[in-house]
Image 1 (cartoon, rainbow, N blue to C red):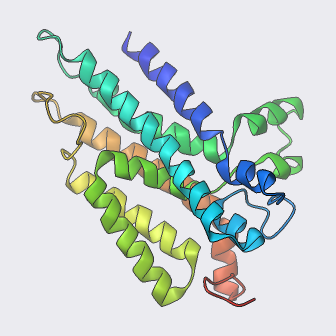
Image 2 (image 1 turned 180 degrees about the horizontal axis):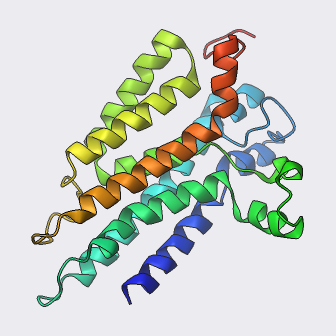
Length: 243
């Protein structure tokens, strides 16, 4: 039963993540962000192309909100499951909160249309660039804010400071999510939607949750591979640049 619930929430997270709001808003605003700029269907590329900070901000918020919603709903279900006095905490079910959020990030990076085309093209990855998703930063941020709003705000502050110093959005984003993940692990019991639960003596979920969050960080860093290469070559676009 546990694993069926986990599977369903993984599917839910993945499908929610597959909704690319930057691309949708861009098309509604007559901007094809896949054909312009970096080609990445994310809020940063949308802002560069449209020159409209409001719609880029809206896309970023919605990309974060979908992961936030998945984690909150999953937390509510887990909390409801354990309202029964005879229920004990199962680490796998508890970790579902993190897993569902990470699957939302996976869906954002590799949406359902990408998966369908991948199967149709017999797993020929080279022809699928037009269907690949965003880089997952704001979606991952939604997970952090759902788990701990204070840590989310700290991560946002770190992101803002690093951008002001380096002017590299990608570098600031990667550093912020790594620091936020470590802070979540340090303050692992600050899961605001699960405080009423009795955790018992099995704390193995702490390690499991940290592993899943780190896997999400690794995915985001891998999606920023081209940005990292450009930073080393000093050709990466900088924030606040007039170009």
